[in-house]
Image 1: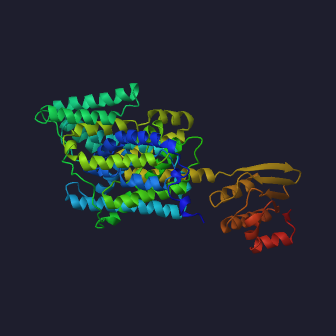
Image 2 (image 1 turned 45 degrees about the vertical axis):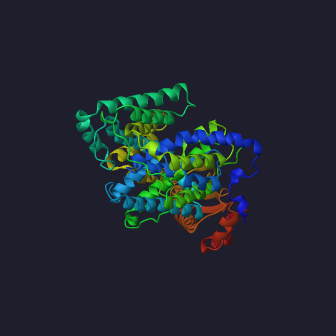
Image 3 (image 1 turned 180 degrees about the horizontal axis):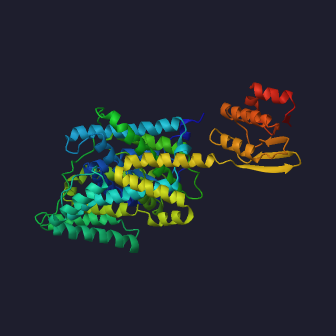
Length: 525
């Protein structure tokens, strides 16, 4: 059994003094991106911006102590924030409810996500979750990107539209109806903020555009009469750190479906980011470790007013480009977030809502992966339509049904592939030799049985099945082989088997059918 040092702070083992400078620079650079971005993502979920700020503290430290990726930065993401909003609305948690009630329900949701991820770790389900295919993820991201981008348009225009949860089409209609009431000053600020983000991303990608527009927005509000002109600012940000709080369980049953969807997406995003930024000299990403670290990040964060947390690509990429050598960089980022919470609350009160909306809009538009859809259409029409249908479900019925549909589509496609009989057939006078190219499972054994029966010709007297690829089996598979034996015997064909070994052979020998095969000399060595 591995000792504590094998679990705790794996990226800090063997730490070198020469790495400290790089980790400090990377932590500050990532903080310049992740802190304003997380505050913006909190608004997606119709939550106070400080909840996003708090998500940059305890979850980040928890992951730093347990996670295996050197450069991954864990806070909230646009995907997770959107699913959080959808889950809270679906569970009947109104944005207009008392702040304390919303905080308790959010804590319950984050706690559920953490518990689900830790249970997945206990049962080693990491590899199973990772089987969700690329087509499904592209479809989910398209639906999510369009939904979130549309949800930010009212804030970019300075108009009032009912918050997230109404559905894409109804939100689109309501937004169009509200356009005549747009505020010109807000529109100009929004367009300017989006323009700065896009230009900096292209010409100076190392400059933290999010931080730039936050600073400019605050300065403009403080130095000009933008508020008098109609530009709205965020609600006052309380100073200080979040006090520990207990979750509320009034809506816990209604929160479970959303928590499952968030847990799946949190793990997929974290594992994807960890693999995407992994350097060749780093250890391979361990799915079980990532489940443990991400689950712990959410479990701890639940008691400190955080949104559900996952690895974010943009801040992780900044972390890596700045030279992060270990998770000390994330601890530096969390320390920076603590300083912001302690000392910059009054300054953040002048932050325009449009500035945060611009950050979210630019971030999520990139989720609408048109190139990915075109590539799927060129390579696999089936996967293209899986992506399209998943996206349409997300737009029409909401993101939670889209996640559920995506998982079902993935499982369906996996079962479809498994069900295809993969055998090689060689013939000789009066005999047929069948080689199993893949092991037999519950999903494919009936297809293989039918394929073998169909391949038997009128002059075939003996069918030899080579089961060398099988090292494990099940009662279902053995029963199907016995049924194949009876079917062939009814046609006057003798079935023989060869190559079965290991645990599969040991299990087969416990059946009367296999014992009869051996007694009749129909098992070849």
